[in-house]
Picture 1 (cartoon, one colour):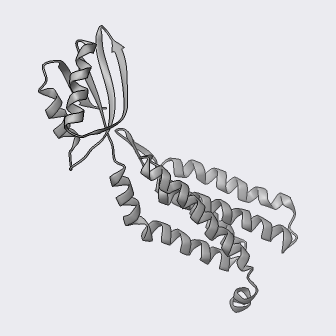
Picture 2 (cartoon, one colour; picture 1 turned 30 degrees about the vertical axis):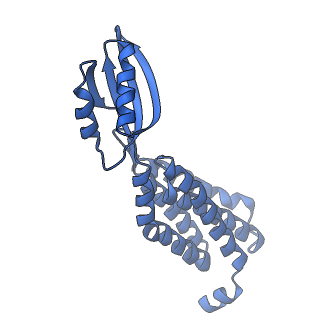
Picture 3 (cartoon, one colour; picture 1 turned 120 degrees about the vertical axis):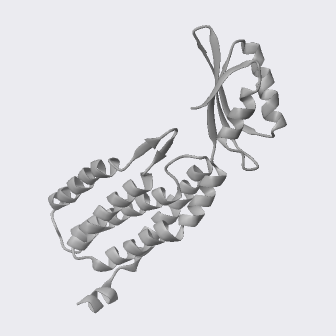
Length: 222
C-alpha cells in the first residue's frame, strides 16, 4: 500500500511546497537582516505549512471527491492551534522570542491533518522540509540575526542642544544609528536611539561611555 502511494504520488505537489519553503525563506532572510523577530525559519515554516494545507484541500476534493464542507474541520484545527502557538511567544525587553516555536506548533498541526487524511507521502515530504528549516538553517539563522542585532537605548538630557555632543560620540565610535527620535517629557529631553553595534560593543559598554558626559542626565536600555 505504501509502495503504491510512492508510485502514484503527484510529485508536482512536492514541488509546490518546496517552492513555498524557498519563497518563504527569501522573505524571512530579508526580515532577519532587518533585525525583525519573525525571521528565516519562521517564514519557511509558515509558508510551507500553508502550502501543505492547500495541497491537502485540493487532494481531498479532486482525488477523493470529498464535499467542501469536510474542509471546515481542518480550518477549525488550524485556527485553534494558532491560539496555542501564541502562548509560546514572549517579550524579552525589546525582543520577541518564541516565534519559531509558535510557527512549528502550527505547522505540526498541519502535518497532523495531512496524516489523518492518509496522505503519507505529502506528510513525509513536509516533515523533511520542516526539519531542514529547523535544524539545517539553525546556524545560518543565528549568524544572520547576530549580524542584524541592534541596541536600543534611552538617553535623557537637560538641554536639547546637548544632543549634538552625543551624536558626535556616535560618529567617533563608528556606530551605525538606525533610528533616532526625540521625546519631550517634564521639561527634559529624551532620545530613543537604535544602534547597530560594531567591534563587539555591548549595551553596557555604550551606557558607561555615554554616562560620562555632563550633558547626559541618564542612559538606560530601552
